[in-house]
Each structure stands twice: as structure tokens, then as C-alpha cells.
Length: 478
Image 1 (cartoon, one colour):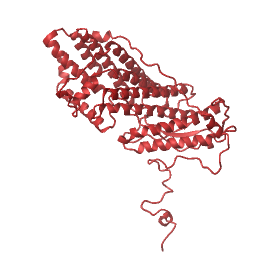
Image 2 (spheres, rainbow, N blue to C red; image 1 turned 90 degrees about the vertical axis):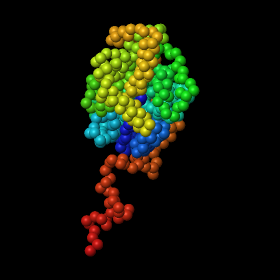
Image 3 (cartoon, one colour; image 1 turned 90 degrees about the horizontal axis):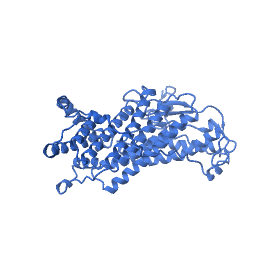
Image 4 (cartoon, one colour; image 1 turned 135 degrees about the vertical axis):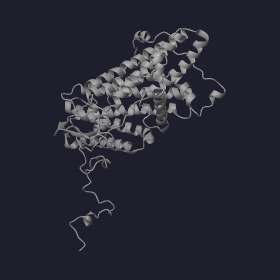
């Protein structure tokens, strides 16, 4: 279900060329080393095959958390703020210039967007915080991926994975919210759409909506029943029927509506200010997430009605949920025509394609869980319609008045503020010493594979190292 973010990459940089400190001379060098480690970690992560990337995320997270205190110390020193209760003086030698390759910005299909040259340390902090939020979201995505493995997890494993994913989403929300608070103080908008105020606001709303839906998923038994029913490796159906405990349906409906409101808010912000500059994948995902959340809310309201003995009203809620998801229902002749023929085949084909994405571990979940929720609705509607036709025989009311009477959302999480990491006393004490002139600041190692900055100075293809002069026009064998 989580959005498949792609981590950005950065070019090499030496902070010693832009900053100097009279109180802590080694601070620019230490920040340069930390950034070089982050750059190498992001490059290494980018070059890994997609199935191997989730295991590399903790290394990227450690690199970002280790670099951020030095970067914030430079920023605090420029503003005259103390660091760890100690005064740090930082002087600006010249305007800082950094380069990052964005991943949310719209680009030519089939080609990655070019690097964006940014000025000021605020842009560097914004990209680091945004990358930190992406990493937390991808960690949550990796934990939720275990729920769809061929080996069905136990109840304890499922609860542990969902709780860990919820924590990661809240951490991502705090990182994007902090980046949003800092970006509101900018005097001019940066050229990169990834770190715009509107983009960070949408990402903060997205992660909060995901965390709210995770709270519902923790106690929602129906997706697990549907996943187990579709799992070919499961043989439980041979000797027992799935047990579905009662759920707090009305409370879950309120939570789902709150998640839908957060997703709608993020979508409105993107379409209002960042429209055209961002790739279409993120706005589409937010729209699908809003639909999924509202569909879940209708389903829970239907479950609440069915538990009260109102099976006809429950079926109406399920059909309203399908309409919220964008799926045609079989409630009228027109709807039957929509679901017949090509429309039904298109829906089934899209579901199978999503299943293949889950099996391969690629960009699964790009539909924000719409098809998975549609399967749950199909299962419940088939069961309730059969029961209503044979036992209850209740009239199924129209769904439009029910949707108009939906309650308001209810918040589950209180977003926690971002706790900015500070340098400890030992690190500050070590940076009071002047840098060793024999130590060269790390610049980040080799260049990206897509860069051709050093192509002119490299050896010809197939040549023995160090024999470039023998292949140039300046030398001749005759």
C-alpha cells in the first residue's frame, strides 16, 4: 500500500570551501565527511537491484542520522544559535551551492530528471529531511511487504509488522512536517519541486493518512482473510473456515474518514501549487488513497449495519464503497452494463497485474490498496446478498442518501514533533581542534554512473590503464 518512493542522489561537496568556524575549525570538515558517507550510501542503494534495496535501508538511515547533526550545527552557527549549550561561530565564505537529483519532479519518460543546482544551506537541509522521510516510508513499506509473502504470517508477526510500520510512518511524518516548517521561512521558492512547501505539506498529509489507515489495518481481519483465500500455499480451507472476529466498525469508519481527509488535503495542495512540476504518480496515489479510505469507511459502516440486523442497508453500504473506489456496482441495469464485457476484464487484468507486482517485490501498492479493498467488498457482498435472498429478504435502499449522511472523521494519532539530533559534548570538543592539513576531506568517492564529468580524462575503452597518450593524436609510432 505505501507509495514506492525513490531516494535521490547528490553530487560531491566540500563545506570547507563555503564555511569557516573560529570556535570549531573542524566542523566544516566533519560535515563534509558526513555528507560524503550519505552520498555513497545513496549511490550504492540506487545501484542495487530492487529486491535487495529494502535490506539496505537501515544503512541509509544511519548515514542520514549521522550527517544531520553536523549539518544542523552549521546552520545554527550561521544563525548565532547555540549547539548543545555551546556557542558555535560559523562564517560564510561564499554562497553555498549544492546539487541533488530529485525523484518526484516531472521528467521525460524513460529518463531520470537532471540534477538541480540549489543555493543556501536551507535547500541542503530540506533535501536531507525529505530523503529521511522517504527512507522511513520505505522501511514501513518493507515491513508491510511481509504480510503478502507466500508464507502466511502468524497473528503475532502480523501485529509486530503493522506496529513497526506505523512507527515508521509517524517518523516520516515528523521529518516532512519539520521540513515544511523550515520551508515556510524561505523568501523565494527553490527550483526543485521536491522540496517546495506544497510538496512537503502533501507528503506530511500522506504519511499521516497512511499511519491512520495502519491503525485500522491492525484490527481489520478482512484483508487477511482475503489474502489467505488467494494464497495458493494455504491449505487451511481444507479443515477449517476462516474466523472473523467482531470489529469496532463505527470507530474504524471514523478513522478511515480522517485518513481520507488527510489524503484529500494533500491532493488539493499538490494540484493547487505544484501542479505540472511533479510527476503524475504522487497525485494519482493520493487520489487512490482517498478513494480507498472512503471505501473502507463505507465498508465498516456496512458491517455496523449488518451486525445490527440491517442486511439490506449493509449491502447498500458495500455498493457505495465500490462507487467510492471507482468500481461499477451491479445495483442497476446501467451498472450491470458497465461491469459486463471489457470493463470487467479490465478490472480483473489490473488486479492480476498488481498481484504480479507483489510477487516480484517491485512497485507494488501503487494503487494505494484499491484492488485489495475491492476484493474484500466482493467477498462481503457475495455473502450478504446470498444471505439476504434466502433468509432476511430485506429491501436494499439506494446508496446515495447513505453516503450523504456519512459522519465526520476522527483523529487517531497526535503528530509528534521532529526531534532534531544534536552533537554530543565529545564531538563538539573534538571539533575545537584545527583540522589536520594532511587529512583530505572525503568528497564522496566515484561519480554516478550517469555522470560524464570525468569522461574526458579517462582512459579509452579497452586500453591498458596509463596508456592514454599512446591513443591520442599527439604521439605516433612512425
